[in-house]
Image (cartoon, rainbow, N blue to C red; front, side, top):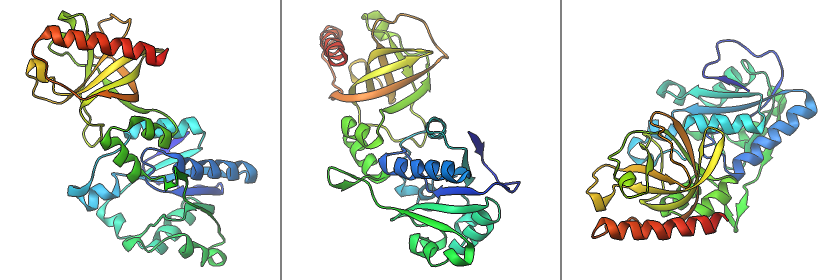
Length: 305
């Protein structure tokens, strides 16, 4: 997959394009993208996903921005797994935000990307003041020599699947619903940092990673997870929180990896979340904490068994 952050050169090959933020790449996004891929194969066109960075909501409404479901790296990786030819992460600036829908289509999609088919969700809007949408494109298909494919909303339990809905469920800690909406597990990646080594002292060493800026995480608590290190995946228990039992102050993501005893500071891991287990608690002493961790580990093994 070709990954672009600018459009310094024009594309000669005709293309089929979808436009959006695609945060989370949920079921609705995937229907759009699979349609793009199918049409590209049928017409021998280039398949293009056109997205933006930073998220427009962050630039235009900084105080209201809830955070991203996935990191840029993860979104790019999952698009590559789907098999898209080109992923464009176009710089979203205040100048670009003032592009009219007409300017965006004519100057970028047609002139630079040679678009022949545009695949768009029924609720998708683009351009200054969100004046562009499916009907805007359909009214100009003859003028621009375009075909426009409209994709209706995807429903899950009779509700529309959207990034906003995924965020709402994630904030509530409803990991199983989040995973259904995403069609894949919610994940967190990071580089292992050195902690206070208290877990090691009580027989539960943990791999600690720091939360990323602008990412949205589940609420503080303990989760059943799987952790991938290099090419092997392990059962794990992940705590998001501040470790109140040992007077922790900063929020951290720490994972006890079952049947794993390597020293891996500075290495990268990928944590897949499957189920909320319990809220984070402050225990009276370390013995109570160990007793609870023993119970958590047993539940974890049974769950993944």
